[in-house]
Image (cartoon, rainbow, N blue to C red):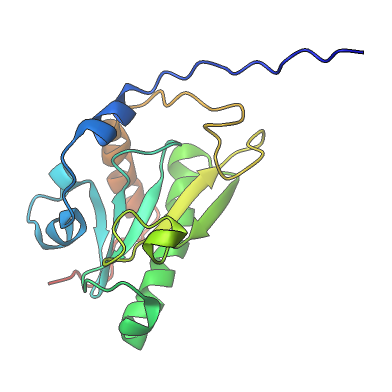
Length: 175
């Protein structure tokens, strides 16, 4: 019995073309950490040692990154305070994503080193990727991808508003 080839669904994600065609800025995380213009850099929340920002080129709506202000390629280069705050922001991000994008689960992780998939291996960042029922693996773009129906700027505004509503914004801000 001959099997039919599996069908691949067409994905429409024009913002991904921006990512592949844009010049690579290896300091975009440092710039986001130092900016006074949080909305332009999609910085959702600042704490003393780390900040939380939307991924500009997400595969799923609400993909956040927790980033230390210190440029470091590995966890042991961070102070204990930086390490704790990085993971604390992962918890804040989960609360925020449950509220704003109805996340039901999460993939949380780091890509440390170029061979591990780090696009910018000298400035680590923790990915917090919201998941929903029906996603079957880490790359929803490959299996039943969702359409991102909301622009980043609108999602950013909703997240900032939700921070106050959830009382998550009250910690010290960074440098």
